[in-house]
Picture 1 (cartoon, helix red, strand yellow):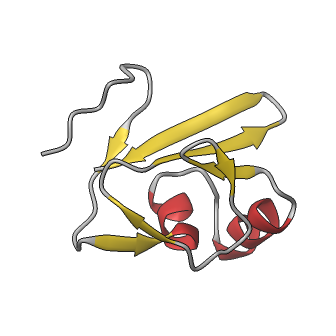
Picture 2 (picture 1 turned 90 degrees about the horizontal axis):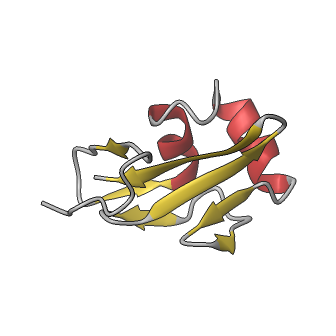
Amino acid sequence: MVSNSEPNVPEVPIRDDVIRLGQFLKLADLAEDGAQARDLIADGEVRVNGEVETRRGRQLVRGDRVSVLMPAGEEAAVVG
């Protein structure tokens, strides 16, 4: 199991070895639905491991850190 080194960032477990970014945003409650996930990604508001990611189909693996810039600040989750 991957150890989450950021205590305030939740680790969200996935079933398979990989998950697509758009799916993970919904699973981690970083987006309400697929349309919002698409818009957040297209607007450059999503970062994977600190880098802006504009591909909704980006494959994530355990340990990847996903953050979203929201009006109230950054929200993040780690793929578990």
